[in-house]
Length: 366
Image 1: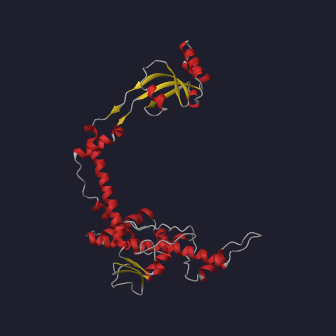
Image 2: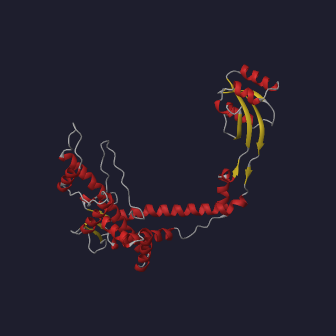
Image 3: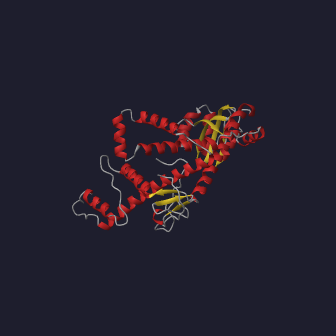
């Protein structure tokens, strides 16, 4: 259904890829029915909008649309025609996206020498069938409701298998990462392989310096820090915990307070400290030293990370070139132009911007 001989766009085709692989009108119509079946209500016969007049589609909508509520008008034929046109365009994008990307995958597999045998495809198909449809009757019902044949399903399986093999071939060669590359990554990302120093502290925040001095004297006079904090602090988060801030790290607090907390000695009452929020009284209760894994410990994992990144980069580059290569070979009739067609220009919206089109992926949808 996808591959035939000839140049240009043959009269029986809607798209031709590489001058020799037409997507025929019969193939297009068949998959349009499949797509319509997937969007229709359960048990309802699939209806395909019929451009350009959409006569049958309008009649179908008139027959199936619920009667409008009292005081409301029924949709006009023009409104129903617009609805039919939108439905058709949506189905067209879906179907041509699948058929074009399918042809691209088949063509790329051939150019790369990637193959799967009919026996391999059938074995994978039977495996999927057993998993999804344990009973034969369930499978037959699926074929009926989806509008698909066994050949259609075998094609989908083949495309997925080829896509996987193509991707595997692109990332097959594992990059060699040098110690110097790994060391450079380690130096630039040390925080990923360690934990910073933590300090557990108590704070009291007041509006004025006098209030801070008064609070500090109360603590020095024997009152617990927690009781004073709950009584006078204006910082709601720490006040509820008696001024306690557990395991704060460098940079987590206001700059002046942060510097003071990480310079202070343990169990030494400090303040008043002026900040943009007010005046702080503070005390460091305990410290937990930072840790850093040595390069020798994490070298292997870093090399694996860098190798994976390079493989992903290679795959991304391949996909970009793959789309560009095959889009340039995809000739579409004007009424069948979609995002994957050569020379495609997105239709302008009411705001004057082009609608973004989805290009085909290495793995076709479906």
